[in-house]
Amino acid sequence: MAKLFYLSLVFLFILQSCTYSHSGSAIPKIGFLDAFQDETISEAKRGFLDALSEQGFDEKNKTLELVYKNAQGSIPTLNQEVSYLLNQDLRIIATNTTLSTISTAQRTHTLPIFMMVSPSPEKAGLLDKQGKAPVNLFGVYETTAYIDTSIMLLKEILPSVKTLGAIYSQGEPQSADAFKHLKDQSEALGIRLVALPVNNSSETQLVVQNLLSRHVDAFFALPDNSVFASFETLLKSCNAAKVPIFTSEEGLVKRGALAAFGADIYAWGHQSGMMAARYLKTGSTQGLQPEIVRLRKKVYNKEVASLFKIQIPGGIIPVK
Image 1 (cartoon, rainbow, N blue to C red):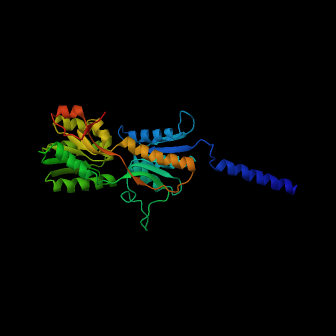
Image 2 (cartoon, helix red, strand yellow):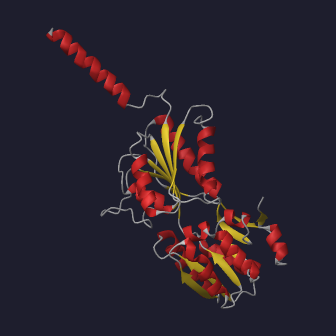
Image 3 (cartoon, one colour):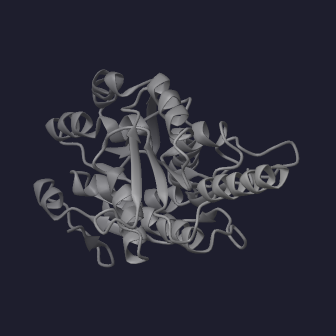
């Protein structure tokens, strides 16, 4: 009887172990957390999932189970969605934009996080007292040093620019850091920067109209959640005032900005997705660490250039 009881315990232990562990043949279940709904930012998600599909992890082929959540720009909702995802027995979680990455990294120190459209762990305030990033944080980040080249591009396309308008979010690390670069580089080039803070996208219209009343020659759309979420409102106001928009995001050029130098958002997500696929294949984080985005380019919008009758120098490619 004792022997039978012992064998039963062994069987139960084996059964529980198999249920808990992720076997190589099991369909990986992953989470994806967007901070808000935006057609530019959604390109990162598309790139991430395309990379996984290329590596054999695809919902259509039932080789991947995706649990997708979008906080719709609400911090309370974001915290709720993080809690929900962390209770789903996920293999990994992908985080799209700064707030998603920070909120998730603060809540789990074990589940692998693959970030995108986010700043470095240092700029996100995620380093510990020893200056080390979370051991479970991977994916792709961007510094804002490229903003310097973005302003040089503006000056190249619009040499007569004297006054530049911008909005920024004080509470968003990436936006505040990009704004500092914008300010420093504008001063270095003799451009007067007129900028105002915004707390959320609902303030954009009034703030932008205030800036435009100060007779700015151009507007710079920073990598900022409020800018992404309310870009069409910003664009409408600037077009009405005949003020071209420059930016650091290709996706915003597709949506109506004149030109940009910056990361390709789709490629950013794809780069993070390739790293995630490597982990899903091996189950090991060895050799993985957060890495800087690789692909940046100079692009412009043909229709907008025509609208403003602006000649674009060579070496800057039109967006498709």
